[in-house]
Image (cartoon, one colour):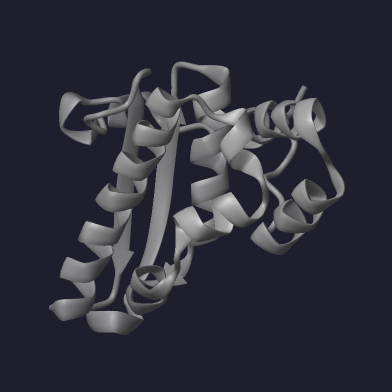
Length: 144
């Protein structure tokens, strides 16, 4: 049985806007199930994101240089809800230019969807850590 593909971010946002409360929570878990698998060899300590309640691995592959460099993200988590948050960020950022990632307010988009109520304060800290890791790397790539 194959995994469902991760939907484009516009579709994810539209789906969250139609859902409320527990439905959003369930959709977040569904997104985590659709996250493309991260190769086992990328589950290394240097790819772990500090500040997350559960373990989260992020790997950013870069094609090109400067603000137009394309960044592809492979990610995984060992917890269902966190994996959904990771999937949201992968859909939002992966395949996009570094300069665009730097300008994207991922936390603002997340909050605008009313997802703050679905995330504990510890998960929110982890989400911020994931966003910071991606943004810092994108800033460094865009500045190169």
